[in-house]
Length: 134
Image 1 (spheres, helix red, strand yellow):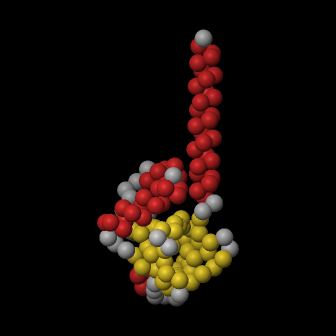
Image 2 (cartoon, rainbow, N blue to C red):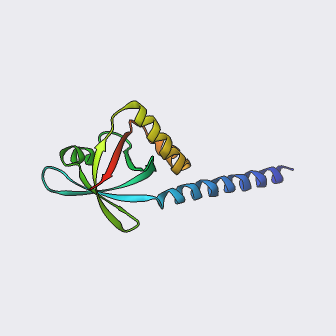
Image 3 (cartoon, helix red, strand yellow):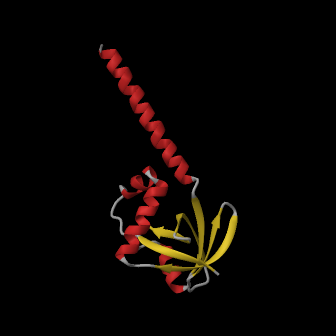
């Protein structure tokens, strides 16, 4: 009987691990590349997740000390590459609690387990950033 329980436990753990891996793998397929240029005219690149909410494209900083936030504040014109297509946007951080909660919920709905795992990495003070085509 002990071997059967152990086997069942191992199978269940394997299924859970596979399900989690699938969730994380699916989320990594939804990564965009953000290009910013700060005041020094030096280009910086960052991998970011994105969502479309209310016909608007949003990215989010997991915390406010990301280097590219300063670039956006200095020069809001950014380039975002999604599936090999590059587009220019005007980036505007929206530092309002209602927007933060709404966009966090949109990210949670899209990225699921992967977003939850990211939230476990430490203090999180997200900053939603609206992108408008230029």
